[in-house]
Length: 229
Image 1 (cartoon, rainbow, N blue to C red):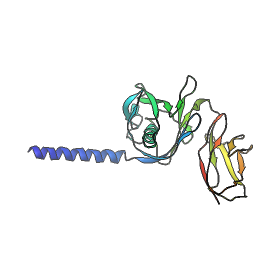
Image 2: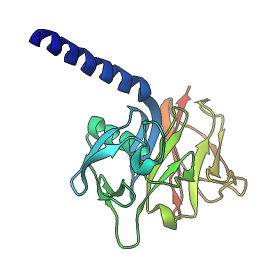
Image 3: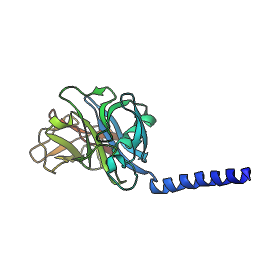
Image 4: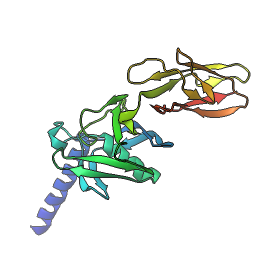
């Protein structure tokens, strides 16, 4: 009889695990982390809702059910951050606010909040209305953690061709990802965008080039990979 009960208990545990995985299966999301001086991470990361641990905040669930923000668990902004940090070996920290049942991110890599500079979270170039453990994400979403986010004028978004030819200038465009407006004065590969947000790049060597747009009053852009032939 004891073995029978053990078998039943084992079956229930396995069934429970499969059920939890079915509800919270995990998804790939595009995560970008823009620190004070450099891009800390940019790429796709597989994540699902799970417990998150920080030195300052301890261990807490981070699965979208925080503060009853969603009815089902799922991948979140902060679960993606935690998974990227673990896999790519960078550090992050955050305090935990029991009132909101969520972490407040204070540091990622070497970029640590100050009295006037804070980390912000955006999904698809819009600030999240809730914390990173409450905000569930989908596989099509672009998640951005940005340092000093609340004092910046633009959140740059760069687009352009994926291939280019030496000696033939290629056109790239810089816009504000929040509103789609062109951004003048942004630097891309040592060239400056005009009033319409466009910039021409004349590549002088072959290979794969990674371009980003930057401007002193803005959060730097996503990377555009270009194969120059």
